[in-house]
Structure formats: structure tokens, C-alpha cells
Amino acid sequence: MTRIADVTATENELHGLFVAGLDGDGAAYHRFLQRLASLLRGYFRRRLQQLPDEVEDLVQETLMAVHAQRQTYRRGEPLTAWVHALARYKLVDLWRRRARHEAFNDPLDDELEVFARSDSEEGEARRDLGRLLEQLPDHQRLPIQHTKLEGLSVAEAARLTGMSESAVKVGVHRGIKALARQWKGQA
Image (cartoon, rainbow, N blue to C red; front, top):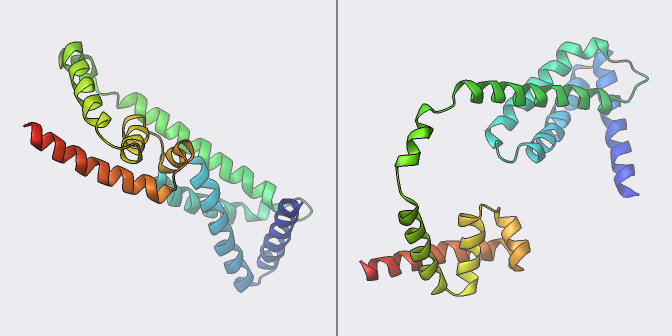
């Protein structure tokens, strides 16, 4: 129930500031843009976890769209729905640009990787790494395995192992140091 109350309070706050800005209150419009920028950052961060560098650009693009389209807003309609539509369009535009860019920038040398290494070399490397990892205690081995080999986030590894996020980071750091010491000892 508090979530609905929070959304309603945010809608009322933003709507009041925006309408006051439309009516000529520059300070209210400035506060509206600051508050909206903060909310948009959260919106885009959740959707662009793999592209954090794009967040601020999308926030600015959306704020500019809100400003440019402000006269199209109908005062009786929910403001957050109108802003959400603009933000969603900016996000879709980003995905289209990236898809188009990726299509034109497909590396030509990918096919050559077939000849770069043999299956036996990769298998041997995995086996050697597995042996080194087996020598580590679980609190070091598991964080490395989940974050570095499986590509999970620190938060996901923490949930999976039951460790805190800090413990996962420390485990990775200390585990990699231990692996380096083991490797030097073998060489």
C-alpha cells in the first residue's frame, strides 16, 4: 500500500511543479527538472545495467524532450505516464541505434578465431584452472567461479553463496592473489 502512496505522492509533486512551471514559475520548473532527472536516472539504471555509460545521456535526452514537448502535455492527464512514454521512446531509440551500429561493425576477423586455438588447448587450460581453484577454500573459490567464470554480478553471487556482497568482493580479491601465488609456485 505504501508503494501506491509513494507513486501518488510523486505524481502529485511532479504535476504541481510542472504545471507551475508551465504557468511561468521558473523556480518550480527548475525543481521539477531536478527531481525528474533523479527519477529518470533510476529508471534508466535499472534497464541499462550492462550499459551504465548511456544512462546520463538518456536522462539528458529525455529532459530535453520533456522541455521541447511541454506544450503538448494535457493538464488533466497523469504527468508520469506522459514522461514515461517519452523516456521509453528514448530507450527504444538507443536500442535501435546500438543494433544498427552493431550490425555495421561486426568484426571481420571473427571467422579467423576458428584457427586461433585448438579444443585441446582450451580444455587443458580449463582443467588447469579447475585444479588451481580446487585448492582454494570455498569462500574464495565460489566468488571467483560465480563472478569471473560464470559472469554473475557480485549481488547475484552473494545471493547464491549466502555471503555478503563485501565478502564476495574480498573473496574474489584474496582468491585471485592466492591463485597468482599458486601459479608462480608451479612455474
